[in-house]
Image 1 (cartoon, rainbow, N blue to C red):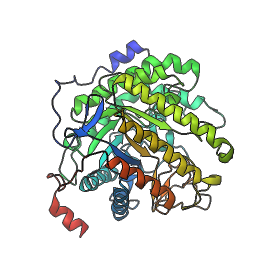
Image 2: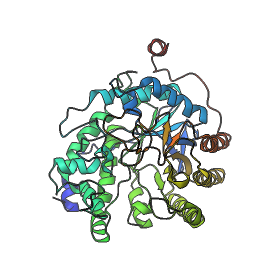
Image 3: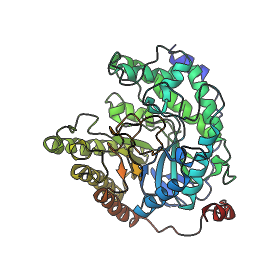
Image 4: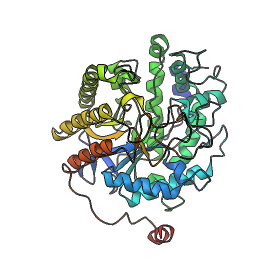
Length: 461
């Protein structure tokens, strides 16, 4: 069912035309001369990943709004002002997939999760935080692209990690999504509904809400896994990025749009692929993820012996992508990076010497480039566990668990995330936030005028 590039261009020619460029209203993050700006000043941030924010905010049995408020308060106190959150989720039979999710194959989107996202954005606005909302997932822990392919019967569905389908079969399968017009029609219907939504808490249309920094096409979209399939799929992959970004821009001209790419490691290890994926005018900034354990650069079973060489590769990876962003004259956000604790421990406050060192390395590279006026504008560590804790003895997520953490269901709960008891790692984040804040003019003042203060006084009182 994979289509040619010509067929894809014809079938997806439903995006509204981009309107004439207009100045952004106050409060919206913009791109000026290849850098992120906010109200005419450089916008630099220390951020985190909180994929489960909408789940905590949902008015349902699995939600916990009081905890969400506490988590946001803790993050704000650390100096974290930007959160990358999941704004989608597709029903899937995968053993590690989320449940509930935003949608199934129909258009009856989950009202509780939509209201949960509303609540999250309203609470972030109160704390002067910005959100990056990703709209799909290459990986099946949230359903993602394989769920759409299952609904359209595009090949035989299988879950990531199925021993009958070893890597890179999963990546090649998920990457069929870009050329499946039926799957993309379903996806675009959801995107149009979400981008056009009116927040049930604030009454503010999403397209007019400056709390949102950017819409993101997907989490870690890859053109494929194998050389043969991936290279052949590149034209369709590039087309999907450009056309989907244009579709979103046509719905919402105020917000930025980004890819969610890992960089060259998620692009068949080709820097040229990174450039082509981020070249379209509809893509506002470059994204970068860094996973040395997952990529085999630092052995999770022997970090002491492999850390030095792995860190050197990470440094080189960041520097290379800074150069790519500079060549594109676009900002760069290091929006995922993580390392396991010592001896692959999952428990809160377990020793994290190498993790802390890795965070410091990424933060120092980002800070140095910020000071030099380079393209790096912010970082988002992966991920915030906060007060969440593993509910099972083996630390694996089970359906029905309500104590969400930053480690998604495909990983042990605590593998990469930062708990509120991880004193040494919290100190690393706090020091970096203080250094970044010292580079930028202070922002002060009351919450945005669109927030219904009486509602919050009653709700929070």
